[in-house]
Length: 212
Image 1 (cartoon, helix red, strand yellow):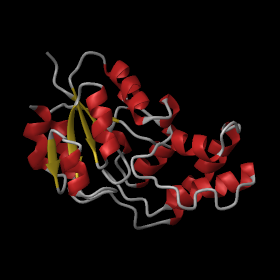
Image 2 (cartoon, one colour; image 1 turned 90 degrees about the vertical axis):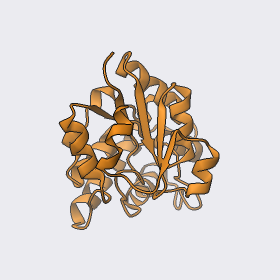
Image 3 (cartoon, one colour; image 1 turned 45 degrees about the horizontal axis):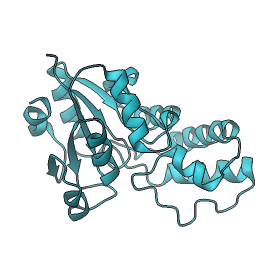
Image 4 (cartoon, helix red, strand yellow; image 1 turned 60 degrees about the vertical axis):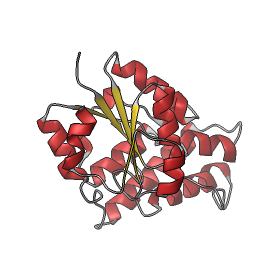
């Protein structure tokens, strides 16, 4: 049997993007849909880009909006010099790659947004996008998880994330879940969803568990 494929959430798990994604999406929704303040009060914790768009602009064409969102996000990322992976992320990814682990994404970001975010912090090359799930694959995270499951074939899966939605997505596809309590949701909320393991930070010491 092959080793597990490890699927990572992005925002709050690998990086913090300081609200740049929210602002880029709000600008795109205002420009294309004419909706000013469309995201006021909208929580992004565990959300998907496709789900947010469906709630805010039901029935509206999204292709032009996503195109403008990606352009705004790319511009914002290029203007920031302080974007970086969260502490311990790079050592963990590199330790996993040294063990020839297959790393993918299970994210609520649209694919181009995910690429921009990971490229901006220098870790895009660590991931196999071909075994990943993105917002284009479904409105709910469970739908995205199911698509990633099909792309990963028969390999056992581990999902690493920072929200209850990540834990539930992992359970939906029979994957183990590693929850990290430094992102959108705090440890008690994550513990209530019963992840297979709950940690306060990521680092290379987790490699044996992830590959076990």
